[in-house]
Length: 412
Ligand code: ATP
Ligand code: MG
Image (cartoon, rainbow, N blue to C red; front, side, top):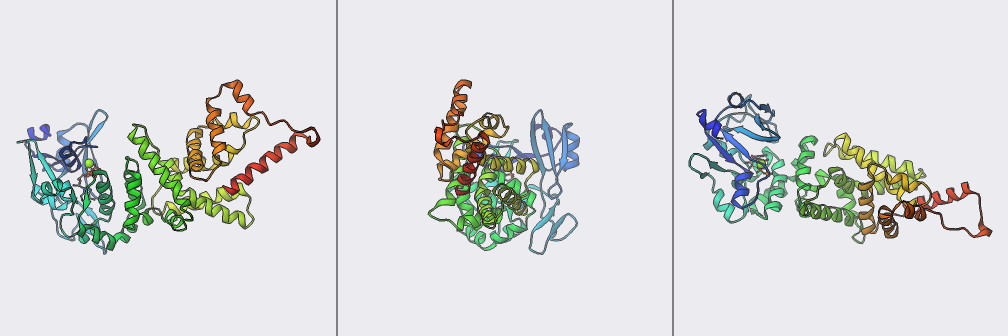
């Protein structure tokens, strides 16, 4: 910011960082806004890259950190080359530059439209953002319905900020959201994937989930999951997902990381199971039924939130390892434990066991097995002694073992 100032430009901190600093919280990132245009910004900083089409932005690199530097947006004419609306009122491109007084109106919530001026260390507020901030209110700038139509992702942002900051949605904002929630389905799936990560990976997943459902937004992000939730019997299917989200929040609170594929595995597991069971009912072999169900559910999901290949690959692994936990004798456990996805799959097994979807005794066995030394592990995987009268050839015994595994999984 000082560098921009030295070159004669204005520079402000804006958005989440100002809002969060006023709450005494550490901002996730710092957004800088300036009257320098992207090409000018590029001239000021050597390590600068211009990105974005919908919003053209400069990314200024400082070592491993990237500071986003945006140029003030102007109001533009409703329809011209630089600002494009579609017929639902959605902004497809918005690259009209302007002044700070104009820029403020393009921002979403009043509390996100506070500018911190390094010139005199003041906060510039054109929209009553400070008052709303004090009252812990999320209020859209301008007419809520129009603003949601311009960019339906603002509805997800409303939920995210309400939960994260503990702010209340202004009633007008809430009303508009109920009205136009459906428009979220028109947003490209790649953007919805990014937004979904922001919603669920930062420590408030459970509350966010509840609120998204309340506003009818969850069903747009996860249509198959929503279906299983409404099929809910004795509170059963919903348990696994809610537990997964709560666990992930707890991990983050404890300074641990969570992975996107684990969460997506949890989101879609019930759907995969229900579909697989239908296939088995129609005569499909269990292993194939699960594989096909995973494929189908994933290809339905990517229509809403695009999923990168490495994520879907990991999800399939987590799912396909589940039945393998039932094989506890012989050499299989020692092989399973070396699988790169073992840890995540085991955590997923625990989740299923805690929510009635897997045998808790099996989960406990795997807990012990991981702690055991080589010798103990060998003992644990010895098949139980057979009665002499029942003695059968080894191959037959393996076969029985496998049948048992499969039927346990079918019931899961
Ligand atoms: P955080 O970074 O903590 O998630 P943030 O408010 O900084 O929250 P960013 O996505 O970093 O969110 O955006 C920075 C600022 O840009 C916002 O505070 C807001 O003023 C503006 N902004 C971002 N996305 C939109 C949008 N979809 N519509 C209008 N303004 C937006
Ligand atoms: Mg930010």
